[in-house]
Image (cartoon, rainbow, N blue to C red; front, side):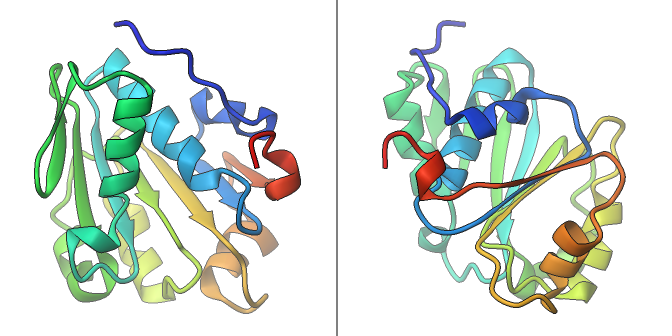
Length: 183
């Protein structure tokens, strides 16, 4: 599979390493979302993956990372590989990207079995209940949970769970605009 030369800030190169948790936090402009989108699209060309893209609130597909992924498909010259549909993205090899909001659909997440990767974008407001349901749902052997957020308060559940007391097999990286060579 030919992918256009994909560049990443140095701090994001670990996204291609197998880890249960990949956590990116910091201020705006660090290329967190942009880098994750690129990495997921590239990984999805190498083997069929089932990827869930979620956030706390997603009232419509416009609230999701669907557009970001679509833009990166064009930038990486992968339009021949990925079919961009209204509510999902499908790869020629069976890779699929689904988009769900947690707040309204957290109980439906229990049935999202077989996910290889879940990307929790804008994860700051995710509640303890949502994390307690989502984490054990993503249980396929080798599955990963990718988290990106701009921390607000040290008592937010996402901050406590992934920065104050990170789980085993986690890589937690702070990245800000100074780490983004294209900012």
